[in-house]
Image 1: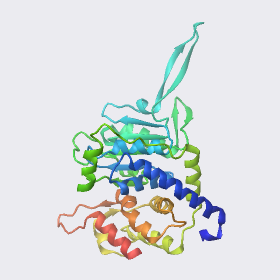
Image 2: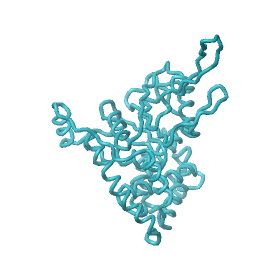
Image 3: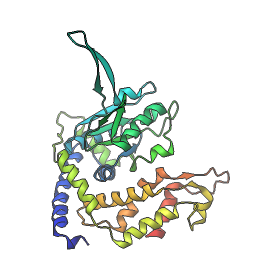
Image 4: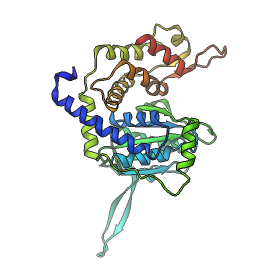
Length: 329
């Protein structure tokens, strides 16, 4: 248990205060999206990447900028378009000529060489460009002309997709979606939040997000997340959920009938890390079943596929995942 390790307890308590300040700073720029902020920070603390799905105008870009500032990370944004090439992201070599007439290639780093990258509308780029980014996300380095260039540490991608207009887009294949630790649905604000947005973002006074962390402190927190203990009940709930979501192993008739493919062991790894990160964000020393319930859909929905059902009897995927976690818990 965490209480048996005083060092981890002290680190977790200090981290809880720091992360509370991080959330407070982000909240100055993004109103009423506490769940989205929590999920994005959970993905980063777990060492992964997040895919933000929401309509235009829901402050996704503002969220990434605020997270970068609050965490003290260098950040960059790439607007994905159909004509974007891999070299526009990774960088390219140029031929330099010296004063003595000598020539040599020099590598110019692309915008991917940053700690927090916003990949805006990632599904609008060609599959070749998507693959270049997603390979770098997995390997944490790029290779140009046979030479390896390591990306900064930490390195995280927050990608966005617009769920409304799909014409002219290139949907991410399942294997590439699996690179994202969490899929986060960004929804419309409630009435009180939208009222606050109208008042506070259209005046002359605007609160400035302050830095509450730096890159090395974030790396230390990510290491702490991996040291947090996981109780047997939480571990069993994750295992039961993951295995019951696979049609080949499930005891649920609806999964065997309607699910085409289920989550891989990587999904279990992602859920385990995300639960630890969410617990730390909430000031707890170890994850609970409640963390598993809250993170099941963001962690599994993009790692599962439903079969075509002409009968209309198939449940919605999020409802099915909710039923599975209820049984697993």
